[in-house]
Amino acid sequence: MGIRKNQSSLTAPEKAAFVAAVKTLKANGSYDTFVAQHRAAFMASPNDPAHRGPAFLPWHREYLRRFELALQQINPSVSIPYWDWTVDRTAGASLWASDFMGGDGTGASRRVTTGPFAFSTGEWALTVRDPGDTTTFLTRAFGAMGALPTQQGVSGALNVVPYDSAPWNSNSSTNTSFRNRLEVVIHNPGHMWVGGSMMAMSSPNDPVFWLHHCNIDRLWAEWQRENPTAIYLPPSDTPNVVAGHGRDDPMPPWDNEASPPTPRSVLDHRALGYTYDDEVPTPGIVSLTIGAPATSASIGQAGEIDGYSFAVTTPGSHVIETQGSTDVVTTLYGPNDMAAVITEDDDSGPGANSRIERNLSAGTYYVRVRHYSGSSVGNYSISVNGSATQPGIPTIQVNGPAVQDTIAAANERDRYTFTVTNPGTHTIETAGSTDCFLTLFGPGNPTTFIAQDDDSGPGTNSRIALNLAPGVYYVQVRHYSPTGTGPYSISVRDWSRIPRYSG
Ligand SMILES: [Cu+2]
Image 1 (cartoon, rainbow, N blue to C red):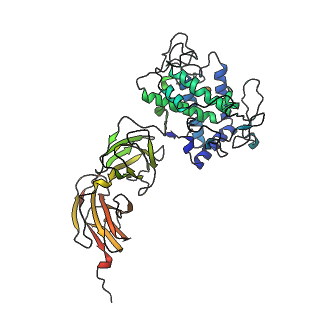
Image 2 (image 1 turned 30 degrees about the horizontal axis):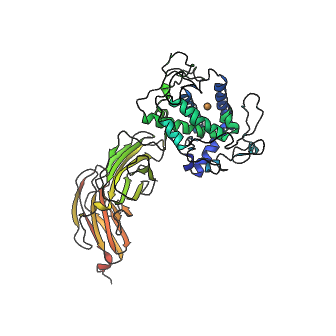
Image 3 (image 1 turned 120 degrees about the vertical axis):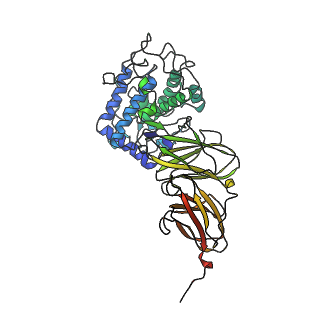
């Protein structure tokens, strides 16, 4: 399952991969087949199966998904990015840089002369064009035909329910037809602001078409989430509805396939195999307790996103971290707002684990966990700890007797503190037959990771030997196995204070 990302957050290699896959499709001819399908839909007017009717959104969802699958045949890591024009509104946006879409058209012809889709590269000639149009190069005329949609415009559109209304075409009221509001008030201006090739029936000739329509599809998905009971309208066999626009109508040009797509068959975009990077799961949010043992979980299917929440009552430093061998990515949201991203982390923890350390005010926070790879699965556990949860944890005396303890339950985390007074080499080690796993934090801050160890001690015991500065340190002991239990002891030694025999 792929994750469609905001184009502004793509890395340079991600942009290059998208561009390269697009150009490969162009070179082998399949890109132009897509352009021709879009043009043919318009040219079928007044029986256009794709525009000015209820299937505008389903048709383009199917169309984009097929294009995305074609890209993934070239490079499986590529997904279609989306262009959020409510944020990236000027010719100076990174979207239009020479490493991605290239810039505005220039001169009287409005020819695009920069970036990978400039005619001068020899790799982007327009071969499928509107009737009578002889222009073989990509053209753009930013802003000449109108303004981009605003956030207020988008919010207004998202508030419209139901999905569509009679007469089920471009005359449907934009106050009673979400589809027509989105199509006319939000979608059309995007084409018009870019101008040039994007104004044509053959508008997919401009690769930004995909990013623009991806954002339209994302907004539809958001509307669907916010209106889970609002069904697709109209049902099939509604009078005066163009073929392909009824809920169970096969959608041309795919209507001759063995199991042709219908508006109903594309309503769940996740079932089609993709998600958006801003999707926050509302159902099935697991609540986490600060300071409690880690919660075991798994990415059970490709593309799964697990949701968590926790409540901060005492402001201060908090750490949200994952454990295990699965490469997960964690995103933190809040306070009290599931959509307000605070930060995201991939690999700041031990191994491929994620670790977020943040000073958090009081409030409810939300966490999303996904696999780094959209196609992989695996087990992990997740915990939240705060500096306020540390008082009362047992102390280990440096060079004192070993502390006896037990991992009594699956996933239990035992915590200790010790104080270093003399700088120098110290060892923290476990003893016994239980396969313990040690993590050391500090100095002074129970959430500042220093080191971890599994088996550096005798047998399967853990042992950390480090030069430590004076200060208070924190140790966490867990079983190596998330389900393991057993007794152990733990001790800390300051080797500068232990007599050495020489001779
Ligand atoms: Cu279209």
